Length: 244
Image (tube, rainbow, N blue to C red; front, side, top):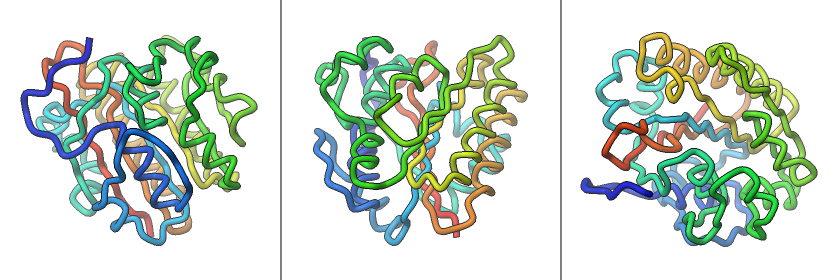
């Protein structure tokens, strides 16, 4: 069950996909609304990287900001928003992020539901519009995009989540080098290890190395899929940062 939002928020996860569509200037239908501040900030960007960070809660991020050194700099130099999570589990939350609809509409609660859904994600629409698109995530989720977008990089699940995220990072950098102009990638260390120093520094370093791989004008967006499961809040950070 989705947690009630007792605090104010700036936008919802369903607003992310239409925002990406507006920046890339492609038609896209959803229940969300483009975030005007990000659209204006991203004007002229012709490639977008969306990094979904598992269990990236807003209050936890603020409490640990001195350890998220690189991500904090991206937020200070770019845009930081309080984003309402539209689900409290990974699969329906990522589905809402990518299709711009709430779970009760897209009805994707587990990986198998993707194959039964008629709703297309922003990755699929972008690919149909000639924008080379890529996804990098755990194998089962990534394979649902097979035959639907240009580049699919599945990463086998493993016990060592730091190693897993490192492989995701390298595959994301590969996608950038393969000229993908819309990339969605998923880092999981915070969800598996909690807000330990090891997990925080791993996520922060991976994001920095991915950002450094951009050689041309692009927009990086970082967003949590849901807050930590033990948290009572419903907010995740959404950060937008331009790469010159």
